[in-house]
Image (cartoon, rainbow, N blue to C red; front, side, top):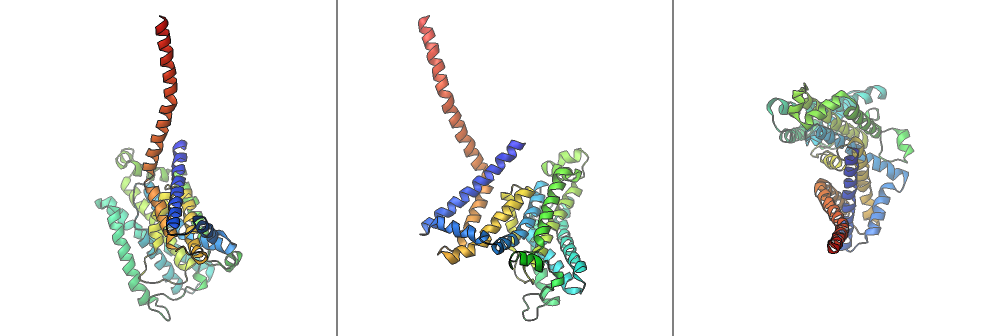
Length: 371
């Protein structure tokens, strides 16, 4: 099991290396220096304390949506509804933050809990449809994404319209914001907020649930083989609903981290890209909580640094998006990489065995000649 896990992580690193190599070739084809491009790309995400803070802030919602997708994957489900769950979590957080004039120690926990509950509720629906009527969660969660999109489109202008624009909500008050002055000042005015600590706590909690609890064992058992799990006395339908609820809660928390942390208002007509990017983060992170954390930080560096790369060179920022897309492609096809690897290894073994076989045959011929 340990060797298999190490091999999977090695394949993930190979996918990253191949993606970076493809990006270098693309830079070279467009007449740019790949070494210069990568220097400014990574420097842009890590060159200063402020840039590091911005990178962590960019990675925070990716960590949570990646965890959401990974948790569902671990239990045999494909949660493609993270964008809608993130939207509803952000909507609930925004609504609570704008509706109550409570002190920050009371209002901020209420905002976070509202986001978690909103995302969990949005996740329960496809989970229940899957468990009760065997409706595929991909279809139902995509429909839930659009319901969330149009719900935000109606509710924000109708009840929380901004002072100057109908396309965005009022500004989130500091009492409801995940931004903390001491934390912002620690990173020299970056966008980092307390959502990063919530994401880190979620990683630790999910790792504990999946690897150290009976609940995690039962949920993974349902994912491996639903019928075998039922034969062992596990209630599979309950596990499906609970899994989608937890996945939705994580995506809802991502909504809070983004809309009342990274941003200061909620806009209509925009579906958060972090919801779908979470699929890529989960894929590259091998559906492991700590793997998701590392993959999200890596993507955060690329996203944060691409603007600096474009400012310092003539390389367009879309190159960074292409690199990410290529890495995802190689991560998705790692089974092909693994097969190619095994084929090369077998060829080396055959070449290594042939001299020994030839030596043995020649010795047998000599003995035969003497006889």
